[in-house]
Length: 99
Image (cartoon, rainbow, N blue to C red):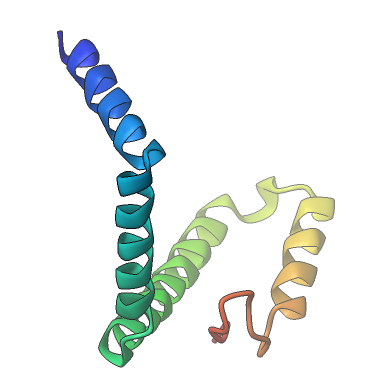
């Protein structure tokens, strides 16, 4: 029953977005989303979340690498090292720094 309800809701949403009035509403939603994304508070929060996630990922990487140690083949370790060195101090596709 839940899947049928989800299907019907998706069908209704597709129909609304496919009609002319739905297209206008879609453009309004797109404009609103763009305004929210360009809001400095939202951008700062997103950057803070990205920075925190990079720090947590770094800690997790070190914790795992300490436990795994020499079990990882040298080729994999060299590849990971080269990828980490290549990404240091550069900006990604979204304009955030990889620090």
